[in-house]
Length: 219
Image (tube, rainbow, N blue to C red; front, side, top):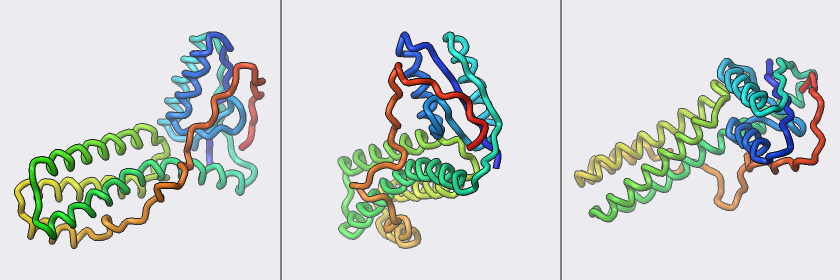
């Protein structure tokens, strides 16, 4: 498996430059191999992002190098890839989790045949939030085929929510019940417990006086 590695150094002052680079790498979901050494599986998209970031770092008076690397230890490679996948899949799973709650509540409303303007507003707001969550996950996802299943699952769950919402708007409770019964797997879809921490919580920002690691030719 081929990886791209970005190694960089930015001026310690002003600190905004260092923070900007760090946040850009966080948004890309890059794996911090060492301080100022980041990895992502190779793709044309990742190369484009790393090249642009390297250019920006040079523009701000820093140094940056991009390496194509191959792991010499399969276990290390799998550990890093799993960490990246857990992070991105968790983002998509958040959208699925909201959809499960959305559909579960829809089941209760269909049983009571209840619908009004207030509920319509609440459901519309929830749909907007889940769309925002999904778009954010897509924007931060540069893993391509590795996250295809999680990405497709989230998109499908959102599509079911949209269909149920449209049917509830016209108060066709019988049709809504049939649709919910056909898609029961999304209502009871297993997801991350509320009290479980995210596997991709932001890594602490390195302090300005930490030494810059030298380029590493291996994963």
